[in-house]
Image (cartoon, rainbow, N blue to C red; front, side, top):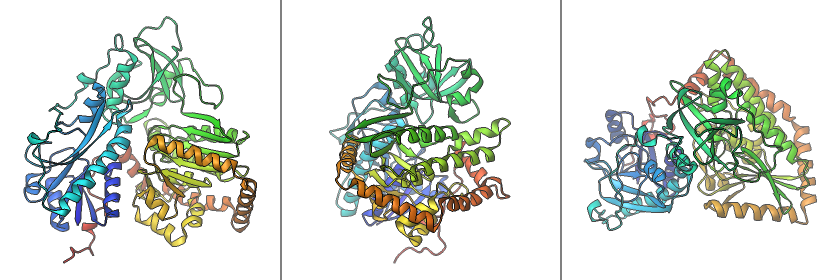
Length: 575
């Protein structure tokens, strides 16, 4: 069938559904929901058999849903209605939640139900639940709904007739509903409120006497800082976060958005103020005992070293790249002969930190200079990984990866991804960036020159399975997070215990030496950076404009042509 995805943005769920439906043989085109007239034009051009709306912020116009079956993906259980479904579920502490695929009608979220799926609701950030449980449930439910539609003869059940309906109509969650009472709220309550607002819109609060929205909270088991502190007081700082006392403990606040600005690490947004707080640093890179916030952590088991790095939204600033490189260099001094780079739960890496780069424009700094510093720090990190010759390195992607993050992963000997992960191994969507991280060396040697050009030119996301088929990664493992981690540990231990490990390491050294003799890594880096220098400092401001709009969440004014296939001049509806 021809299926049009009508969406507010090309987010992770839209990417996943588009890729899954294409794998089932459907012809997919995408249109951003910018205005009624734009959506109507897309429908007229593509003439879809079915319309699926994975992510909308407004109702589908009547001119479309009256004449076409439109399936809306709602992140709530059957019967749940309202724009803040997941927010209310997290803040209320629901034990189970779900996704409902329903048909668009005049009343929002009240149409007949085509399919649904449920899942246990873990205690986590809203964005994390969306990228894992919601995405998996939505994929399952949409596939079932599409199969039912394609087969014909299926009559979706009216909401009032659904036996499993147990949700309710809930209003938009306002900041008054999210407000934290620092004098009374316990740590668990504070975490639920911030988690329910994570990603968007954050919790309206204040830090250092300045109004802001807060995000990215983590609990602290030990009460650090001033012993006479009162609830609400700021106690300490660590890397990007500050520690704030609750009524029964404390939480780390990792990111904030000051009024009129954009989301930034807390210690950058309040650089001067947070510098006055005592720094509570962790000693070394070993995983700390007890519950605390730690963005880089190392542990060992069965001859395998595991290096975790949990960076918010997968963005890696200059400082974070340098710290991770230092941790990697230290890990290489350990006796473990297999080193697994685990990344974070939601993202492995998305490359350079565009928000921190944009922040340079708020003061006396230069976004171009910060871009240059950041890409060189990423390159230094990638080089450290490529030149690891005394052990087998494995990048294991439990979460998504994009741009330079994909090639940082590919700098490892092996790349294993969890089923359900999406990879975007291209740069051009960010103002036609050329990209670095040694991709001109790492990609062609894996997939070949022509396939490398296609990946970078087409700018399409890859599923984990698709990445294996294209040879970009080596294995697609279990989709369940716990099963994935168990499988990773088992496979890595098998490599460490294998009798041919010494031979394998020797072959790795020989291959690297042969590649270096043919063309030094420094030459690849110089060539890439010559392009990047023009992106950052040249006459064409496309990168800076694209970064500005990305960071400040500007509304899309058109759908990129590589997504909206129906707008290609040569595209025609098949007869």
